[in-house]
Length: 513
Image (cartoon, rainbow, N blue to C red):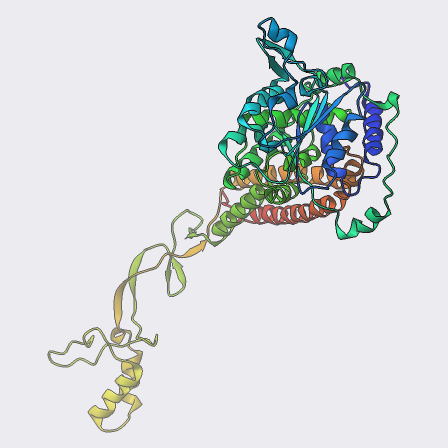
């Protein structure tokens, strides 16, 4: 894709416009930036908050960013009639039996609109308003006419209730909760003197022609894999949170990201443009923070793979290596014959004869022969002490002359048939097996390495990129850097575990063959 020729001048121009419009507005950087971005994208902004929080002033400021851009303002109530928004009926046309409104100076002729308490619109207004906001068209009698509307800012003290207002609510792609000035900004508020700030210079303002060219070019911006992965993951997260986002909104969100990228002179959207997602996907203001936290936790993603996936894979490989290290197989001699243990001595036969031992592992003897006597004593045999006691009882005194020859005679050993246990040793793995396991670990090492490189680049650029971003709220670079550094530390730990894992695989016992 060709590189833009207007990148530096356009970005600088938009930054100057944004800063001009913000003069004298306290803690209103975010809604003002969203308003200007909405105008560039042809979308609408909803401001939710109590009265007296400069909502209407932001609409008036936004109009100043464009040339020949009339603003229409109206406070809606449930008693508002269509004539107040769309213009009165033409008497002359009625006399000719035609239904036609005089729209000059009303909403159908405005480039910008500020509709306060918009959700109080009644059914007589609602359908026409939906068509005008979405298609930029207005049904004037039997004729459907195109309107010049660039952007509408809706304001409300409360969220809509009732299904009939859901479609109108969905027309506002960007939503922002506007709170009263904080305690930190209150001193600055007290210093304001109510002077009207100067309007931006005429040569700084945007024309409709340049706006239409900009919008057409923005549609050529590419969504790279990491941004698509972010949107897919966000959709899954929102479904888990039961926050509905229509297919229409997702398509509009994509274009908003394209507009954000093109306004910076970029031909690809970036993860940083995703900061805007928190203002496009909430249904209730309290949901925005959860969406923002979700986004911030995923900063630095440079591939479709999430960090959680790396952690699971490394853990699975570590468990597999531990099983391989603990695995035992029957030992074999040089001829390949399986080995068994006979009193800890390796033998090649699985069965044979050996002296029997008692429960305390002492070697046993057969009992001295007597008529009808079972010399094995029912399989219990006799210990050395029992044999000596036998001769003592038989002769009446202890006499080694009788017991020792008996104990030394191998014919008196208690010999039994037995099965020898297999001689076990750590399992030996083929060269092919070890090479395959090493290759498996190496592939993950390379994938994590690319992930770490992306994180490193993001950490190095975060302050410059975020602070120079036209639409991200000031002060975000600090938390963004902190989040990235946490992910960086986690990635470094994964890399160390993988290196240890590879060494462990290479150390596995190998089959000599």
